[in-house]
Image (cartoon, rainbow, N blue to C red):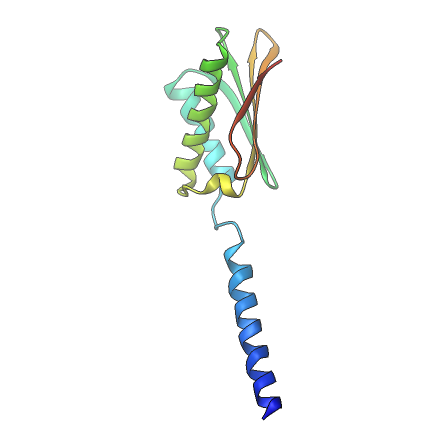
Amino acid sequence: MIKRKSTFFLVIYLISLIIISGCNKPPEQDIGEAVSKTEDYFKKSKGIDCVGAFDDDTVKFRLLLEEQPTVEEATKIYNDVLKTIEKYSNNEKTWDYYNVKLDIGYKNNIIFKGTKDVGEKLIVKSK
């Protein structure tokens, strides 16, 4: 009787463990492709020269502007980048799985850096 209960609880435990560990994985998506499409979007529709990359769990995106933005404008641009990548990834929870490092260049200098860690808000700092 005790052996039967132990086996039952062991099976329940293993099933629960499998379900829980399966729920913590990032969704299947090609974030690299979403970054590439975002890069194309900003180049073609906004006329902004930019380059994006994806490395393991971090998206990196650099925008090169012809006019110097304010902090508010930089924040708006960064949020546009985040929303566009999210749109192309087809997952509204993209930023629950990936970090982001953004920067804006003006006249060959980086003037703003933005970071967004998993589940956190965007932080924009001037250089």
